[in-house]
Length: 334
Image 1: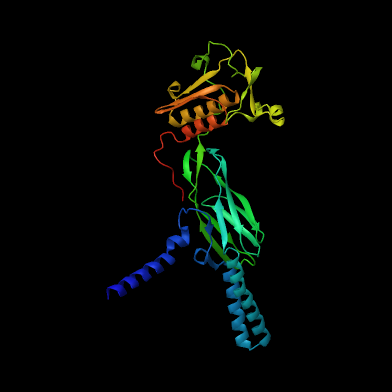
Image 2: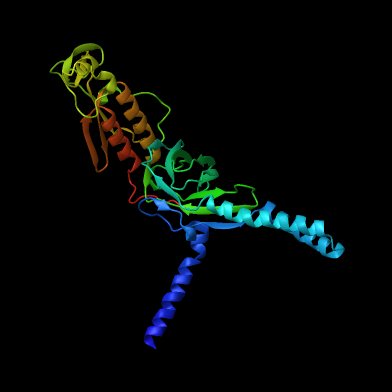
């Protein structure tokens, strides 16, 4: 009796999981690894046009019965066969499609992030007119040839700084006749970073915020060529000495000098009149301008200290610290 009860309970839970309304409307939530659209993940219902088409067939059938017209019967059954065959083709247009998402590049708040979605078609038949749409975002359409994969960037408008979970991706198709709408949900457990919006005011801190090196030129300026040094990860590609690299003599970086301040601290406490988001916005602008000016700069935030440095990696480190400032956890997305 106990084993029978357990089997019944397990069956009920299995059916409840299979027909869960949450999965029907929102999918399974974030998942690890590529997502394969098996039968239970693809849903299909008649479209508005499909409902009108079915109503038209019913009226034709009633007319054929009323007048006992063989030609009307033949036409009605022909259209009915097209209607039911469309179910199979629309459903198969999504079935067994594999979805994966690559790393999402970081953007500034207010910009449109491009989510790189990989569609792997492991069947011989091509997939046509597939609409990809992130939750509450604009959609994009794609075709995938048979036994091929397709990379498509799906737009995602950003509205808040921080690290965010990728929102739910919906794949939808009405191919071939638009009589049915098949859809599936996929959500990978990946995140993306949104930097604060840079302030529009292009002006680095005044000279009192600079730390001057009184020992003379160390090759961190930008005016005159000062020599070569070994390449370090994060060095600007514009400063690499490509001639020595082409001759197979190794990677070297050109150094420049000049009578200028070579060290700059971007300090949170130097902006006491601004609120939190305005300070982050101004500091983000300073990071971009300091990097463009090839200044050796560091960042000071409450409980965060990034030492002096240069290059793209250093810039990304500073911008990430600004993006995640005072955020205890990642911001979740639908």
